[in-house]
Length: 225
Image (cartoon, rainbow, N blue to C red):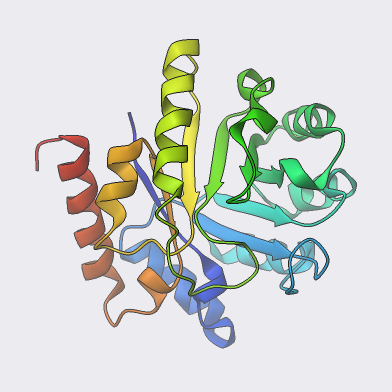
């Protein structure tokens, strides 16, 4: 299994966004996680396709775009055209999840489906074969810097066991409150794509932080140093 670290740009300094993107890449990031919020699905407003397009121009790594918006099916094309490589939508945000996931793939992008902390895995049980990634939210979405919800670990373990039984090669991404000191627990539970915002951008040395996270990931996964 491959493991990926995706710094969340929500916690970056937007006044120096291009510099922050380059710094994260030089520090060893694998993806850029981009949080899109509409003020309706979550109580915050962030960015839209124009900013994603601007990020695409200065980013060398893939863009992992997380749509925390209602009716995400209306915005798949704009974000795909802006340069998203992975588009993740919430199971709670659309009544036609399979159709929306299919559209993401039709646009040539990887498709992800996200679940809020209180949403059951049963919401995605019949779509697992159609997605590339499931995002388990380990905080209630809307704001950066929140504390990790330990109950997420059992949810990650259950999802990983379901994927193994079904013999599906689907990534499990976890987002919310992950830092170097708890990333091992998340990986041990079965996650392989780690999103961290303030856990990286809130530290003085991104390279040292990502290096420490990667060492803890390898230890938790039982990989050699």
